[in-house]
Image (cartoon, rainbow, N blue to C red):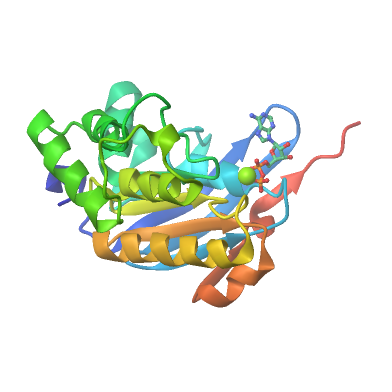
Length: 232
Ligand code: ADP
Ligand code: MG
């Protein structure tokens, strides 16, 4: 369940960006007048390498700081949250899946999932039960196996379990298929979509791979938001 105290405007949209501006110091700018993703909606964020896909996800997650506008996650403007409050909000409401999984080596599958739940503010007992359930749902039979002992496919399942174990309202997957062959890429997308559906989350998957277009009902090209200033 999403903590109702975080929601100040009802729960119509998973993600709502309005008038968002962001620039890296050297040239690249994202300008997002309006972008919305409904609860339960799955979006492919397309665009070539360097077009701003990761940056847009980092803005939605509040990892990068927009200089103007609003970024509402189920009604809460994350730009109004700072420091530990933003981190806890992100942990509770946003699940992230990375291309290289970013699992903590030397820790078990269960410990990896529990750590994410701990950062989201769950009690130790909840971390344990939610972690077990998420891993079981994703077909990990040995939750006590160190992650480096698992196959690449199993590691990806652990990464997906970690992203959805807290039932976030938003799941962000950044190039989750970039290191996979086409058959495994399709299976990974199916897995992520199913996990997001089960969590009832809004899902954004980024990819520069055109073959994923057929698997998504909605495709947004990030280049419409991007501007690169030519160096003088
Ligand atoms: P994509 O994920 O689509 O490949 P990115 O969002 O990573 O694109 O990058 C968009 C643009 O911003 C690129 O031109 C990249 O070089 C630049 N960029 C990315 N990260 C940084 C950073 N930390 N500092 C400065 N420029 C960056
Ligand atoms: Mg990227």
